[in-house]
Length: 519
Image (cartoon, rainbow, N blue to C red; front, side):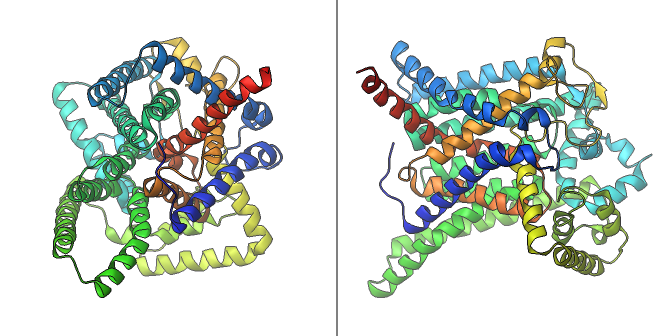
């Protein structure tokens, strides 16, 4: 479904995003095999050309699937009732498969997840001093910890372990997110687009290994998708603004990068706002429009203030952390320039920031360290570090699966075949243990990027530009601050949605060209 030509700003966003997608594919195929970077997986980069060639079959397979469904079953997804049944079926089957995955391969992990899933009695008891240090430095984790604590207390009252319940909650968040994006796909690209989105979303994202990890990445996907769904599918400006505001405020408490879609909407609205002001000056203001804008703004501000106060109260209940110990963005900026650590997590940098008790002194020290590192690197060094960070962030279709510290603390899976598929229990893939899963992820990722690059300029309008600009913000953020491929997972549905028109274009071109070749 095409919606005219985009504005100049939307065209600029589209072309910039297309160049970025092409650049990432080039980095994966041509650069990654010869460059050492953080979380590099030889079993993926050594076969990049082969995987890129194999990924070209993905849009063809999706085209065959879409054509078969539409012709064989005469499915009319334009009918709201039919589409509703389709979405409910998608959700039911995906939840059943996720339950099978959790039963078969679930595990408990370390790093930040360990702190968030630690029972409240321990964080306020035996681990009080350690918890004070952790949550003091990372107060953004307090809201999620409060939610996890509430689940833990409820599970404790029922006499069951909270960890599998938290993993199930994350699975549910991912499933709802993909269901919301199905609605977005139909709204933007029509029934064919929804059918093309569904299989990749199901296999690549719905059954992704990260659904087994109870953390902000899988939960954050719910909020990024909900914000997008409100923007694209809401029928009134008030519902759109209030919905986006609510999910952005709460989502920010879970993962700060969730603000990017809201920022993208605001930036893309600037030209329209300027034009509206000019019209009001020359023609005069429309009282009905002014009243509508005021009503929408008042509702959004009221919801934002109420939710912010409520979420802040929840954070205060979760743990009494020292606000003076909190790491500011300057800490992550400093880590992003750490050439020795590849621009990623550095324990030395964490200890350095912890060594300052005063927030102002800590921020100044972080900035000074960052400036010193940039000066020492020089232009060529900064470019080299940026290249390695780009590969760290975007060269792994599994989103750096198994690359976090102490990834497998305890195996709890019961089905050997599922454990072998995900490779749970041992870090590093090999034939028969995780290699197949990571290869499939990489092929899907490259196919998604190719679809993004092949997408036509027209179609989707401002709504597509919001997704593209959100992802461009994410890319810039990860290049400047701490590099982590896992942060891309919560925005993965945006990539797949943006790939759909490119896949449709490739399939249509193949269908048109095939008869000519036979002739």
